[in-house]
Length: 148
Length: 182
Image (cartoon, rainbow over all chains, first blue to last red; front, top):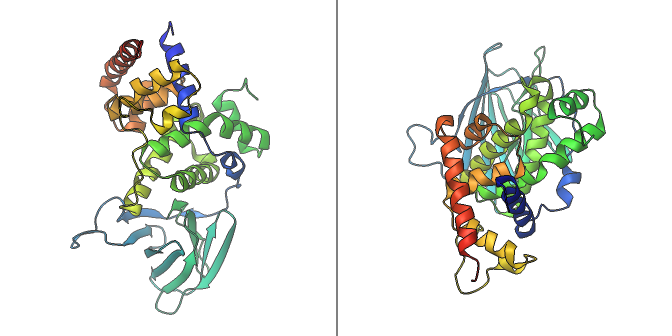
């Protein structure tokens, strides 16, 4: 191992042997052409910082997102239920009705936003998720992908 | 495809060139996997972080300001998400894969290594500080990363990275030497 590069190449080979990349991961690296969605801004995430006036994040993850353009805010509460999946409860403000589409790498589901702005989705798979808020007459708003 | 730069691959992937996308994945997957695992994630969560990173890249392909810095963008994206997942998963942290091995017995990791030299290198690497392991892992898998890329990915000041990198390499080299005869 005469040079630093030789040493680092040998290290990379050792790491590959000790903890190899699962073979299916390359196939799982799907290319998804980007959809025409407006990204919501992440304003708060209990996985990054404990929300004010709480002692700890607890078992739930809470997200607060917004879009300055049309004044929409979205609050999401996510609960992972054992190994069975993720429960999502959301509130869109101001309430305008519409639909929420939840997408994961190999599927998706949709639900209505009620008159007060609430929506829910039960037992989504753990792993990468994306929520898209579709409101009448407005561009679709996306949380972007995140892992839950 | 192997000869293309990251910037060229990004340009082609923007035009939905599937082979360019596959090359990006092949070139960076070991780095992303190692990044997620080094954050303390179990296999399934590390796999989710890798998959998330590719989804995020596809979604942001047209917004990456400096395609030549693709490797740095991928590492930073994966590491940030891995740290979030670690917090979301709370107490589900696995046994520390990268912790120091017992000196007198081969660790599970050592049992899979092909030769004595590899075992020496693994032992030497395992005994380094977390910071040294993080730096060396990144530059081992991605030699083209700039100091700025590595510093951003690890949340370190860039002005101290050069000296820290040199010190970590020197310690690793010395300990590999010291393992001779073990």
